Length: 192
Ligand SMILES: C[S@@+](CC[C@H](N)C(=O)[O-])C[C@H]1O[C@@H](n2cnc3c(N)ncnc32)[C@H](O)[C@@H]1O
Image (tube, rainbow, N blue to C red; front, side):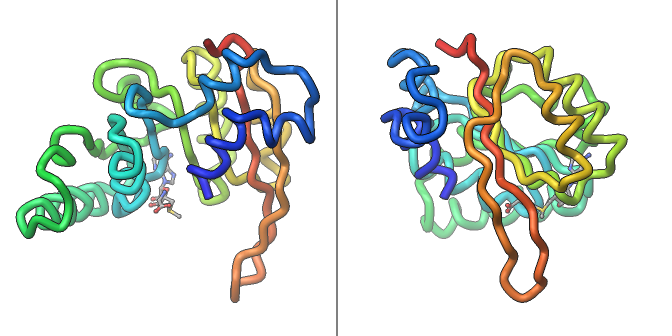
């Protein structure tokens, strides 16, 4: 789903529907997750998305996760996949995982030493306090696309993101659990 959204933004398919003409062709193209992008999963759990994104595009991909044991498992899982030749050996070089609270640590919004260009966060599980701190941190970075799951109470905080606009609100219901939330895409207007 993430890859589809990135590519539809890049071709103008989504923005044409919601915000006609707002993005230049150059800005649209910057939305595509490609081998030169830096993908960050904020709250990366066991690292599934990080692996998928690097495998799909060859980009550098990183995860920041507050539960340190999940980071340990993510690294072990990735290394086992490499060892068993289930994924190419380069995946060990293009992926990294950090155990930290993404809201408070200074470094983890970086991927391979530079600001993440494409960020995903399943932020419904984040505390209100952390969402506020994260929004402030994100305002200081030059990400291009941020895709996040929002709970209604988080909207006011995240919509304070500067130089970014909400392009795509999509209502999502979790199967079984009955949770309802929106997936939102924020694009930095300065993206080039
Ligand atoms: C539902 S999981 C998502 C896993 C992964 N993104 C995926 O889609 O496979 C959300 C993760 O966010 C982590 N998390 C919650 N608050 C966080 C914070 N402030 N900093 C970093 N990780 C956090 C949780 O521990 C949990 O592992």
